[in-house]
Length: 143
Image: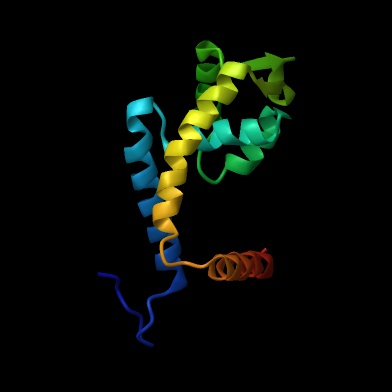
């Protein structure tokens, strides 16, 4: 059970950290048999959504979750699997999924979607949008 502060409310920081841990745990469990974790999935999905992107752009999105070595490990694994092609060299290397990579992304997306569906039970689109709006404003206020 969550600790309560002096006003009787559990602080938002607790819930932010806890929901992130719970999401990660559930995604990792669901994707484990396919050789994926939440963060490996997120990198694959970023590559898919970006069509063609760079390592730097992917790292900018993922740097709160993984370090540069982990990103390179994921990217190199995708290349070895035949899911990703790299064009160029260094941190600005262009990255693009192959057809096999896009197919793998669709397969993992179906599994990931079930976790999202479960997480969103009883939460309306409007409630979700409100939470996102509030969190974005908090970040803006503090940055």
